[in-house]
Each structure stands twice: as C-alpha cells, then as structure tokens.
Image 1: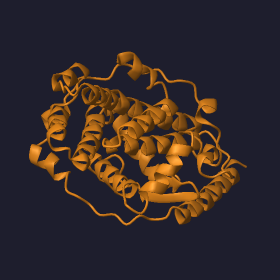
Image 2: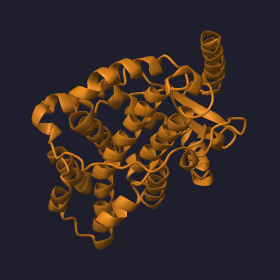
Image 3: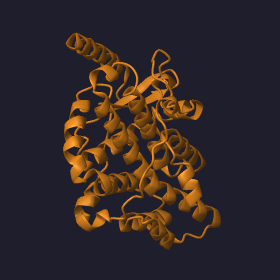
Amino acid sequence: MKGIIRFNNVDNIARTKAYEAFGRRHPEIRWARLAGIVSRNAGWNMTDLACGPLAAIIPKETRQAIVSVYERANWLIFADAFPQLQLYAKWKRTKNPRFQELEQFFVSRFMIAEWRRFWEERDEIRLMTALIINEQLMLQRRFLDEPALESFFHSVFYTLNELAHFSHVILPTPTSSGYAERVTNFADPTARIALGKRIAAVLYDAETESTIFQFTNKQEPTGSRKEYDRLEKALPLRLVYPRFRHKAAPRTEWADSHDLEEVESFFKPIRVQPVLAEKQRKWAKWELALLAQVARWRAK
C-alpha cells in the first residue's frame, strides 16, 4: 500500500487523478471527489504563477515560494488522507474493517473514531465533513504553524486573496467555467474548513452535481486552465515544474490541542446558493491585465 501511496503522491496531476478515480469507484466517500476538484484548482493556481500576467506582477522568488507552499500542503494532505481511503476500500472488499490499521499511518484519533462511526451509520455527509476538518487541522499543526512560514504565509497569501484569480475556487462544467466559491482568510483553518464545506455544498447540490462531474469525468487533469477555457495560455503543469522532493511528514496529533466541543461545532450544516463563475473570471482577467500593465510601466 505504501508504494501505491508514494506513486500517486508524486505531483499535483497524480494526486488529482487518484482522488477522482477513487471517488468514481466509491461514490459514498464524497470527500474524494471534493479533494479532486480542490486539487485541480491547486494545479491551476500553480501554473498561473509561472505563466501569464502573474509572472510580471509577483517576483520570481516569491512565486517559487508560493508554489512550494501549495505543493507541500497538498502533498501532506494526500499522505494523510489517501491511506485512509485505501484502507476503506480494503475493508469494503473484505467486509472486515480493522480500524487499528489506521494507526500504522498515524491517522488522528478523531478520524479513527469517525471511520468507526461511518461504518455503523453510513452518514456520507458527516464523514466528508470529518475529513475536511481533519485535513485542515492536520495541515495547520504539521505545516502552517511553523514559525518560519507564518509571516510569509500571512503576507503573501493576503496579497493573493486580493487577486481575483486566487480568490475563487472554480467548479467547471462541460460547457462553461461553472461555479465559484470565494476564498477568504486562508491562513485561518476555521475559514478553510468553512470553505471546504461550501465547495462540497456546491459540488453535491442537486442542480450542479451532474454537470460538474461530467466535466471531471471527461476532462483529463493537466494543471492548466485550458481544461475549461481554451483561450487560456497556461501550460500543462508537468511542462512547467519538475517533481518536488518532500521530507517525511511530522507525526503530531492535532487533536491534542483542540477542544472536542469546538471540533463538533464544525459539523453544523450550511446552505449555499451556487454562484456562476463567469463574472468572477472576467473580472480576474481584466484585473490581471491591468496589474501587468502597471508592472511594465514601473519597469521602464
């Protein structure tokens, strides 16, 4: 199993394909397809930083640092979550859940309890929400709370949140750029959990689910926004970036520093009205073109 996990965690494209393939085989694990669409957006943001107007707006060293943060964060999430998915697939096949196996992959106590609960209750939405909560709190504890990263993270990602290209998660359909969810206060894990729940609400909305999945089922992930807009100039991710090398993930337990009542409050249901992405995308292109022109003027 460890070999399968390493093979599928080599880069953004491999992760996206693994999430989406698992979600198609096991649709009851809703988080997998949610992770797939979020992973696609991460790839698009990474190639945005290498191609087009952003290259003129943001210094090269800063862009490289941002890409490293994206890649490390998504690598850590996959390294934590995908073993859970693989073990579930085995339990489903053998009809013999051995929840203690999760401990071999340093899965949090919180998620071990949630997998037990899912096996008994089959509450798909609760498990999806539990995985959203777990991965964001794990990421905060094992990576984003590092002192060396904190000041950089707050300053750079605050700037990116002001750029429309980075301030929305896009959920495309086969015929349009689809739907968008606003990203705010990305440094705050509570805000990221809320964002994950909002994306999930749009993804699994009765009016949007089938068309978004038509897109992900048909469109091969490349890391380029050309996946949903043929007029975009972004190159495929694997032509832009080499494979990254990662050190082993720390084995800290995020549940040690969180109150259970606080964590349970994250399960509160939300309602979201899906918002079409086209207006946001037009604004983003105009904004980036303007900023690029300003950068050229300053360079003269």
